[in-house]
Length: 487
Ligand code: NAP
Image (tube, rainbow, N blue to C red):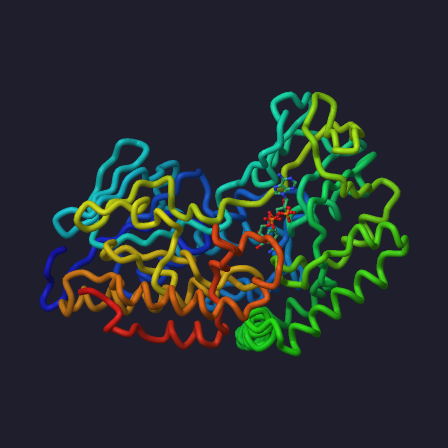
């Protein structure tokens, strides 16, 4: 840290060049903090959108909300645009702001240690550097979760996780198996069913499906957006308010009328869309809609009723050379097997080794489970902030909006150090414990605790997500409560 007049010159490390890392760099520079380094382990920006290239990948948050508020995009092709378009959007934004030229690609941070008032980083290339602040923009749904199913190595066809799609494996006219019925498995099923000889979807738990059409924007509409950027900004804000007042409020109050409306829409979708009563009952979940992360699809029920589709609800016994053997003894012969089995959501920036104040290790701090004050700060990790860290609003939200609110808040804390009002800053242990107590209590009212297994739940069955309204999140992010921090 060097002093310039009354101000300190800060050096900042950004880890990750996905949505949140690009955002951080743009906002730091805008705030006059241009001494930063962005580390990215891969060779391209884009995070989750770089890694998820499976057929059918799309975002089920409306595109005009799933965009940076300061970089509206008149060119979105659909109300819910495909993954490749979203990846191109992030690449374009990174290029437009000159961020792409600044990124240290192919450099993973292995170790971060807070020593003598600064963060000492070591990268996979053996490089070492020192910083005043670290921003961990390392993503949430990032580490693939591989199922504990016997025999995966015996499979003679191609087997891969949905987030590690092998583009060289032919699909057309072949026999494809998909394990998992989350948003990913559902999107893959809809995208592939017409291309393949057979698509077997292995369902451990049925999912509620929220119907949602996905109209394309006409050339006229796009031209209108191009000519009237103010309309696009207005649209962003309108969708955001609709989301906050609708879905976001519903999920945190399981007894709300809004929640009942969502359930009714999902039930009607199942009743009206699936003709065969046996298939309909196989597809009927035995828990409330939105207890698991709600799957949104205009065409999944149509896809699963096609002659090339089969829904296998019998539990999987093991994987064999020729396919998947279910507990009823049947062998489902396959050429390709996709593990759409989700992510390890308790990893966050790990396996990076993080060592904070007084030699406290992150693995020790998070020995029980990850927690963070307001999802951004961890006691004993001074000047270390996370975007989309533990206990934030995740699920059917725009994580871009979440990250923007978080970054503006973090910037206010960084400014305290920059102005010399503070030496370093991190949430106090007391504030973090109080936040945790309150969120665990509030979680009892949410739809996520109404009797299902999902990635929202921690090892105790308590939702690890933000259990209050989105408006409350906005209010919290407006300005830090300084009494919650150690300076
Ligand atoms: P997921 O929702 O965690 O679903 C994983 C699926 O794999 C579940 O159906 C699960 O069954 C099944 N599974 C896991 N282990 C299994 C095993 N050993 N045997 C049989 N089945 C097994 O994962 P995801 O679909 O990849 O989605 C993760 C999250 O990513 C989503 O919830 C969403 O937030 C995000 N996402 C968003 C979009 C979008 O459009 N915005 C698209 C894709 C993903 P159980 O239900 O029984 O556990």
